[in-house]
Length: 454
Image 1 (cartoon, rainbow, N blue to C red):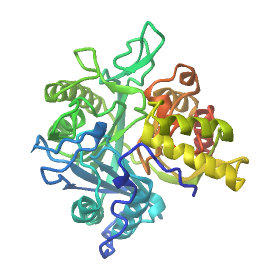
Image 2: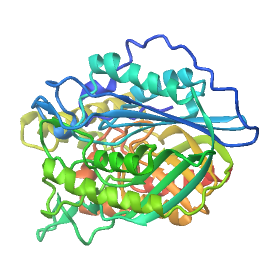
Image 3: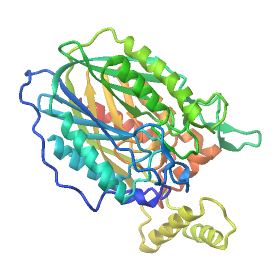
Image 4: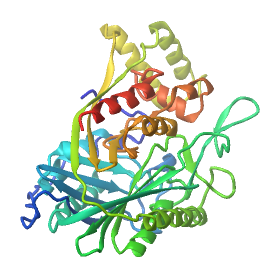
């Protein structure tokens, strides 16, 4: 796998949890199973950090002062025949590629499931902790292992229901100003994904066992604050937990250009907006849940392969040197520290002669349960990419899971590049090897090709 380092996040998340990994005792899933029937089990653990640490979102240098609501990791194990998968939703901002690889491996071992069949998503709350080594080794890693292990302890035969609804939780956040500049705020004319999907699993006794909610919007309703919170998604999760009597997990969609729809019409929130947006999301999620009329016995299949995204040609050597000189002279303000590192790496590649065709390639695992397809996407990707993938798919519920199985900065749709803005700058400056402008097309087509393996 080619590593595409994310220069834009706190450097601690690139190494957290790698050094000290506890011994794992592999769990043996219950042997009392019905042949040829889907099985599932779910568990949840608390992963709230100690108060006083730094929060990850917005690069805030203010320590947390309180806990508004508990952060969690939720693990859902599913088995059909010889296929087993483990879905994990972690209420933190982002999980680096290295930490993701380690968590998938050790949580898979705990649940008796191959690492390739572990899907690990971050809900992208900006009010979660910096993933320091201490937090990962003392809290995150052991709690993820515990949830994974518990999820296979008492698996039950299940039927599956699914419904979708329109939700106004999100709104495009690339506001176009009169001077043709793009800023982070509500853009009522911009594209976003309005679809919320609820997948529910019921045991044979008719009781709900687990729910998955999928929709797209940054968990940033709290704004720049000092309270630890799951943000708006936490309100939604708690409400559907209570309504259904089951454990609910949340997976982000393609939220790269979608913020929470705040009633102030801006991108600046506080804890009041967490409750406001969360309540709206809760109403939508409960409505979708109650719209599930039929629960069916479903098959599950898994398709594995890789996704290959082309890199753009390197910036010319002389241009890179000039840009670096401007930064070092203090005359260029663009993301100074990270950009300088990217430019130095660019120059290094030129000097080594590594300027030819190049690709970012990552392993991919797709999961198909009846009419549902789960597609992990290790980027903060633009919502239009998800809409296209869904439109081209032959499955009724094609759910692209953003911020899942890794973190590689932003991936924007090609039409956004000409306007620039925050997301485009991150896309262009996430590494010495920038993805090609049409990487979005390749992401869609590579995953559609993998679906054919079902």
